[in-house]
Length: 332
Image (tube, rainbow, N blue to C red; front, side):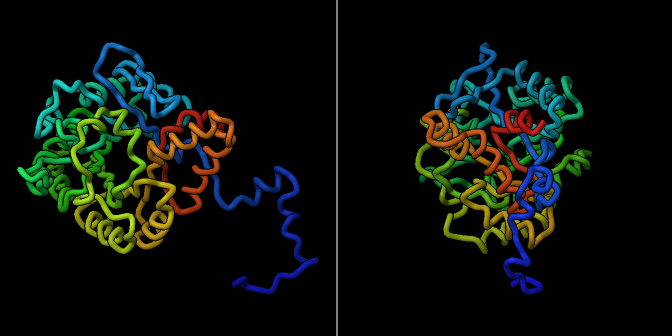
């Protein structure tokens, strides 16, 4: 209900749409490069860039290229980069032990990126699925069930290693119960009191992750699905319970993933908790836009910007997206 009656012709809403200057002046929401987090995948091979077939226009980057991406982010005003690893299948095992290698791909990428652009935040995924031979986010038992507490112990060690390597933010994406509190306690004990935790607090069991699994090399390895630990797409109240628990345990920021199909969750979380809430425009969302654009079915650049604005309108403080570089260039 409006606060007072509005009727035509006294009110002509098109007056405020008639020219670019007035549309800009009266815009309720503004998108800037500072709203974006650039999602990249790093790999441990010799190639500088390896195209991801299911994500047109997106490449896996070498460590050197990741460092260049950090410098590029600084130039464009993108405040942070979220990194995800693609490692050799020969390094994967049942428990994802390579995630704890201090000389592994992720520590090397963090160090190279911080050396190239120390002013750009580095956000690290805390999860075992890029490192496990079975493609799940944790340790599994003989029945294929992901064990919560045994997995959390490894996630704690992984998060501490990332902090020690120079990560600004650790971002647990595994959806194990209690892992935020365990990671926060370990970071405090190790002296990393300023290392931030971005919790994937409302991460749904979604079909939109397929291209990402291609990008990190877990698609063919994954046995079964992740519905025993990721949230059901049918639930919204459960998301609020997850967020409340993670805030209580020490999360500094929270995330909703995927993005566009869950804008209602972004709105509920941001309004309920008044905590920085990020949305992840995931690989499947990116791939849909790019594929339709390549076929001439949509104006890809326009849809890219429209979707990014939708996250701001829903209440997101920031958007993790594979479009970050392209969007920031357009915004400049």
